Amino acid sequence: MPSHDHLADTTPQSGTLSEAGNSSIMSQPVKAVDTAFPSPDTATPFSELEKSVQMAEWCSVIGELFYPIAPTDFERYQRPDTVEDKHINYDIARLTVSFSREPPQPWTSYIHPEGGRYFRWEHDLFTVYTDAHLFNPEVLQAVQQFVDQVDGYLTRHDITEVSFDAENVDLVLDVTLSKSNRTICGYYFAYHPNRTVFWLDEFESSERLWRDINGVASQDHILHEIQSQYWHHCALFPSPGCASQVVIEELRDIILHAIGELPDSLVSTTSTVSYSMEELRGMLQLLPSKSRDFNDDSGPGVSRIIYILMKHFAHDRFLHFYGEPVARLNRGTSIYDKNKVHKCSFLFHVLKFLLFAAPSAYLHEIESMLSDGLLSRVVWRDFVDKICKDWSHLTVYSTVLINVDVAFLSIQSIDAGPTSSPLKIAVYLSVISSLGSIFFALLFLRCNNTRLNISTDEAAKIMNSYQDTSCRYENIAILYSLPYALLMWGILFFVAAFMILCLWKTPPVTLVLSSMAWVALGSLVIFYGWVNCTGARQWLLSIREDLKMHRLLVK
Image 1 (tube, rainbow, N blue to C red):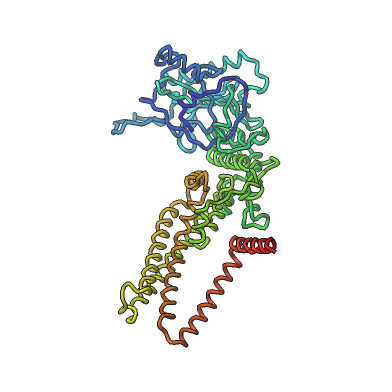
Image 2: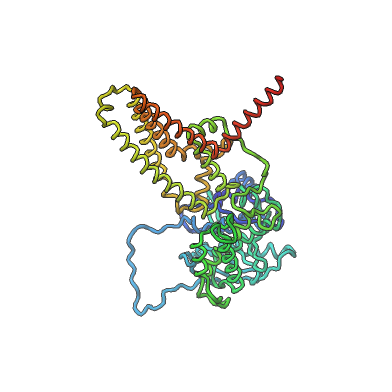
């Protein structure tokens, strides 16, 4: 997410009500020299040209210092505030039993379960939330003026789409400093009756909330993103109200259904659920059996967890086009053009045969895992765990093969031969291939062992970084197949060396028996390739059909 300065520079132009959804992009910290905000009317003066350009680019219908943000744009985790790195002498006065500060009226102060402080004010038209440090008089004055501006706009305009009152509507103000040290204010509204967020300005949701998701056009579909944003808002400000029993039971039903839909369950083998059985059971254990009263502020921690889970499930529904005609019902299924077939590059086909068809297997697995660029947490962990185990086994096999090669070279009759003999060259190549297999396996293990528990967003970014417009995931599929392919080449070189030993200058009986054994083994290998390699079989069958057609034409 661009910084709030950038958002302010790109505020939409009109003031119609609009709805939008969730965002997984984080904003950057605002550059500031201190944490005290100058009030809007005493801000650093702009030149006439700068002022006109700024107002033309990011003037909101509320005022020139406002710009709309999504709840996921809220800059709680990117604050530039710091404390002085030195010891401060502080003496506690005698008989001091209270250490709390009374917030300025009419504000109420709350501490988020994570530790951040925020403030709440029940205004006549809405309930205001902000992270701004209202104990600072200058900051308090700036926030008060922003609230007055919103109040004034709503008073002057007859808005019938939303019923404004403190119980139904929340107004969130994200007060920051611009690059010019000017106080600016990001804002959004939350509407509790239907769990949505909205703005007084037009909001460029398709660019700022789901830029990487194509085909989003239905309002029913967008509703899932709006609700995901709503739950994120609730998680930002969980006090004073706690999650209702209705929300808890709704979440419990979602989790229980997800458990039944897991790929290893009896209900579905290709579920789109992105959590493991252990994670879902852990979620169930977190849910309270009975909700607290709405006015009881003693449970913000559990409520925040509930809101975060509701947000994630709502966002998943949006990603899988829940309720749409093209809803993704099976993992690995694309909702876009299903008839579009991507042809692999010529180089990939060449390397596929040189690497014993291993790239094809990896490419199919990666593309199924990253259908439409989406990645499931469960599938990602299973994939990383599987390939790491495979590479660990390959290092053992390669080590055994190197020991066999060295023992083979230590045979007196072979060791006494010239260094340039075909037998020794084949053994040397076998050792080099095995060392290459160990090298790449250890390299990939080092890279992927640390990726087992990363987030799905990070994993998708890593995998998509290997993607090329022309060859998709072919590059990473080729790389991942190197440990296996190099081990196979090491085995083939050792087999070649052993064949030379068996067939080169040997007695006739030994030559005949060895040749028969090698022919039988080779036939079995060819039969295996014929049965398992569908592509090669179809290619040979097509050649045979072409030859038949050619003969018919000649006749």
